Image (tube, rainbow, N blue to C red; front, side):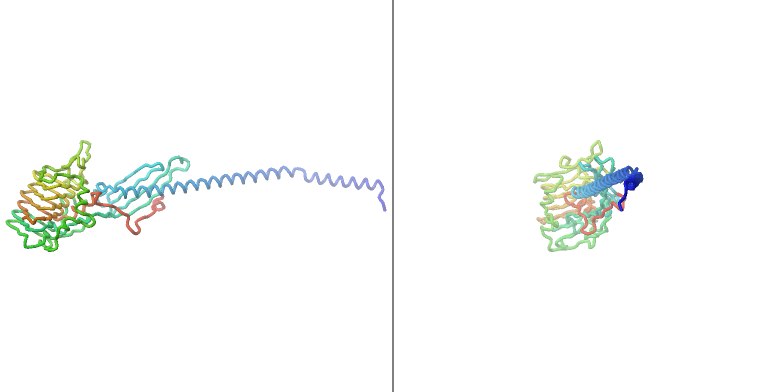
Amino acid sequence: MSLNGGDRGREGAGERKENEMDLKSKKGFALPVAVFALVVVGVLVTGGFYLARQETRIGLATKRGTEAFYLAEQGAMEVISEWNAGTFGALPNWGSAAVTDTTDGGTWTVDITRMTSRLFFLHSTGTVSAGQAVLGEASRSVGYVARLASADLAPRAALTTRGKTDVRGTAEVHGGDTYPPGWAAYCDNPPQDLPGILTNDVDDVTTRGQGEVTGDPPVVGDPDLSDEDFRQFGDLSWEDLVAMADIRLGSGGTITINNTGPDVSEAGVCRTGQSYPLNWGDPLDPAGPCGDWFPIIYIDGSAMIQSGGVGQGILLVENNLDLRGDFTFNGLVIVQGNFETQGSGNRVNGGVMASNADFDDQLLVGGSVVQNSQCAVIRAVLNNSALTRVRPLERRSWVDLSSLMGG
């Protein structure tokens, strides 16, 4: 049955009414959705920027931490490669010194602590700060345990020689190990008593008057003593030592040397080297300006040392050496010819090696003393950078101190 016009009108009106109701129910929906979408986008953008900034800061911090670590490594390696034997060798046990340097990347500081005569602990800190004020400083610390390696210059007796040796008057040769006066704070080596005299034939050693030779034993013989014992010292030869000399005197003949002793400027600085050939260090004041100056002194020819004087280090004499009175030397004396002492007050604390190549008679007369002192020999070697190198221990020498120290 068909609908008439009135019914169709009522039906169309009903549909329009329903459509209007639908539109009214959806009124105001678009704006909240748009606002919510903007909020979500803003959160995502802000979060993205925040994460990117954090990643950037973390990256920069990691980069700067790595740079600081390598600065600390650089400082330790520079101190080791340019080891200052005089300064660090003069430290008492558990005494410390610091070295600092500034590079384009930052600053490193190395604290050097002496643990024993041959062991040192290096605490190196690298700091990076340039151009990163927002992040602040970055620092890392590393530690190294390093050991001194030195030339083999240990004498086998207070006096090592060949040929006839005559100890007269009140002269003395002692093999018992002692510290030089005033050096106890700088010596930690265990005592090592040696023979008083080591020679190729014990029958060639005589004493007269109040001359005295003591040791463990007083005199010992080694028929195999040869020129090489006085010219080869481990990996170093006589020629090597001569080439390392800090001071050179003489020109093949005999020279007379008077009044050796420390030379200090008005500013309190020890003046060393060839320009000050009579400054052989200061064994009487190990804490003084020249207390850590242990030169290698080479005399080309023969020498007569008289009128007092002091010295320390290693004394090399190409021919003969004659001590004429009141001369004190701490360290090692190596003579390729004959060794003699006369008068009173001569004293060598350390050791004497006299080749006596021509087997002349050697005379120790008057009040002269040759005294075994391992400390004097060790310090003469360890305080000369030409003879000493420092190396990290082969095992477990390195530690990262940053986490332990809060760096």
